[in-house]
Amino acid sequence: MEATHVPRASLPAEDTLDGGGRRTASYAAYSRDYVIEMEGKPDLHGSADPAFRGDPARHNPEDWLVAALSACHMLSYLALCARGGISVVAYEDEATGTMAPSEGRIRFTEVVLRPKVVIDPANDLEKAVRLHAQAHAECFIANSVNFPVRHDASVTHAAPAGNRP
Image 1 (cartoon, rainbow, N blue to C red):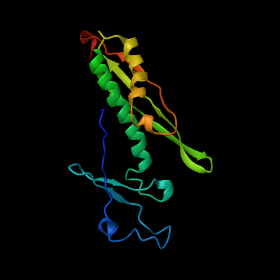
Image 2 (tube, rainbow, N blue to C red):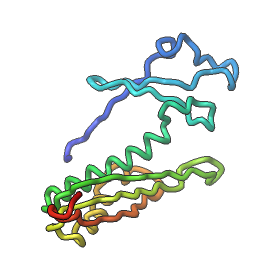
Image 3 (cartoon, helix red, strand yellow):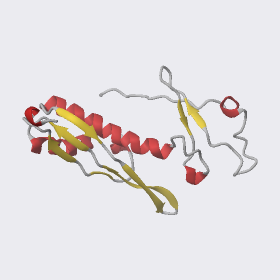
Image 4 (cartoon, rainbow, N blue to C red):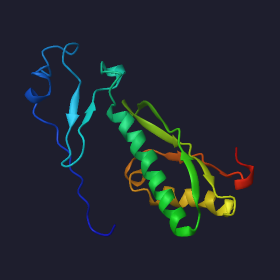
């Protein structure tokens, strides 16, 4: 991507969300629920983290940041594999983010990505492992945050076709 890209999202006015329940007369009483609208895409319904009185059934900004880092790494990795002749059979990730007080504020101190990748048995395992570092370097979301994003990747070969259940 060489040109500037401008993603857009909007939060509707408070009275369209929940009948004005966002009024902040009391910290305990106002709604933390919100809707993010993006033209041509499904609405995203969110809330604050339950630690901040949010709805645990809704995603929160912290969830989305960890998910965005995981998805960006996956998409970068899959593109590199496709261009590099590595056939990915399966990909999963169990990403976690750590938040802690730092410099007088609560902030992310790191995110750890744990991709587990299965590749075609005919492909170069070492190359597939190396591509994770390149994917990390190319992930524009990881390049945009001010905390470490680590990856603890594992790559294995799929069982040969005759040995699969």
